[in-house]
Image 1 (spheres, helix red, strand yellow):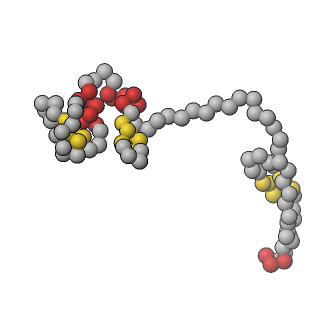
Image 2 (cartoon, one colour; image 1 turned 30 degrees about the vertical axis):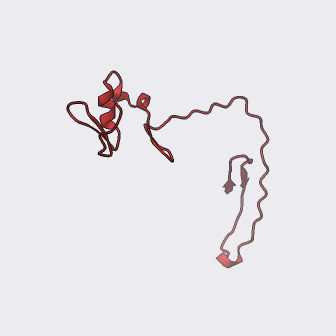
Image 3 (cartoon, helix red, strand yellow; image 1 turned 60 degrees about the horizontal axis):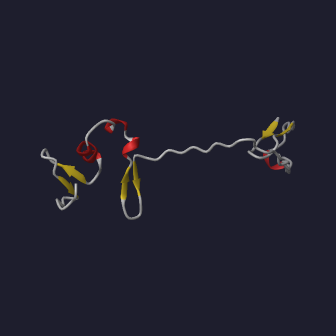
Length: 102
């Protein structure tokens, strides 16, 4: 039994018997699968943002996707961002540069 299925096509099934034939004497089988036509009623596309998005010119940290930062302070969130450091006094540095508006 040979069964072939593919998205958008009807499933192809057929019985074949090869018996004791040598592998080089097996027949060539041409398959013609028929496309299925159908109309979808409803489509729902969902997607979720990653916590960190690496854009061409910037790094975006989506705080709303970080469940551990809910209800915390802004400095707690900044501590989790790569390349940002926050000292015990709340001073923020970006890549070691303290000239950051916080």
